[in-house]
Image (cartoon, rainbow, N blue to C red; front, side, top):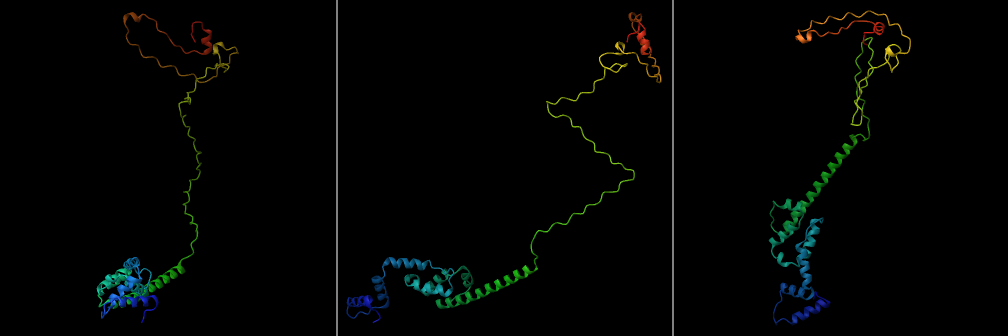
Length: 262
């Protein structure tokens, strides 16, 4: 009487095909009805969907309603209370499984009731944590100063020590760097001047100077040269050789003397 339309017609045909006096059980009716109205491919699809069902972001009650809806397509996985509890726990979130791991349950309904209580406590705890975190951020924000660029204070520099009176600073000396590289010419020592002692011009000596002779400057006469030490004894053949003499004369005297070499 509860089946109407196509389902009612199917039921009447199903009873007509049964032997006389046979009572159809609920399991027989369920299997026959599903086989007639729900294709096997749909049954397999719903069974896999039930086995992969998880809580996710759903509440416990939302997860329970979907669990009961899909459990009809996997009767072998929930045919006992223990199997039904295990399948329900395996689909819960990791936090819920951790909270329920230390408990044992009388039946499936006891598991559902404990899950609802644990979920409520977890929500209250999370709300309290958020409230405390917001209070800490608010308190820290009021005490902090606005961040911005702040110049560093100038560093203290000690004054230079006082200089003694009469101190004259020495100018910095410039270092003469030697030439670097092979192409640079080496610094040569100054060449002695060959200028004439009479006129000061180059190109001739005083004995060839065409200008009149200048009087020599009167200055202190140089000290007489120290006498040479006596010579060592020489061989007999060399004793008769004459030795030269060096006499101190002026330039005028040397030029006028015919036997003096200048």
